[in-house]
Length: 218
Ligand code: ABF
Image (cartoon, rainbow, N blue to C red; front, side, top):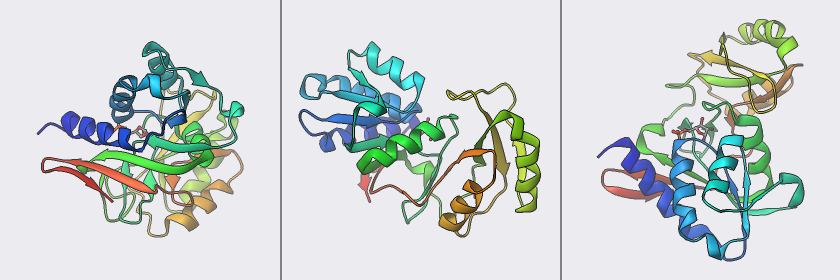
């Protein structure tokens, strides 16, 4: 079975958590694109969505789903998003698509974070397969990079990428994260870091994994 078929399976299974008349938090990435397509089939049942990226916002509008600003809502029932890696504690690395800051903001508004992934995203230890993205204020790029080296990382500037917030991304390669909560906090404390891609302090509540044998819900 293809990776896309597994992503679609996970995305479609997330529809079961969508409540009537609710506003849904929607993340970004190719798995979320499948979710937006699936959401369009029940769009008459929901009020709309808050999007975590300009790309998702466009796609939601294209499907005829109303998009609300995060400032218009005090709480979301669910937030549905993908991940680059997820561990058994439902902590994640996110930000491969450079939308990590808005993803963290919309996730923070939600009562329940539903992570939709294909089985290739499951890891025992975060950082084992994917570099850790860090969104950085442009003028702080070199200074932040030096501090990341001090933490044992090897930051690489993601050239040509500007986030929806006008910032840049540093990816820390080969960065094994043994204590995700402590590392998330330590990285947040570096001046010039806007957001880091560790989602541990607020991890997922439900994980839907698409596998060749079908859906697994954790
Ligand atoms: C978003 O999309 C990001 O946080 C993550 O980087 C990416 C996952 O991508 P995909 O669904 O395309 O595998 O969830």
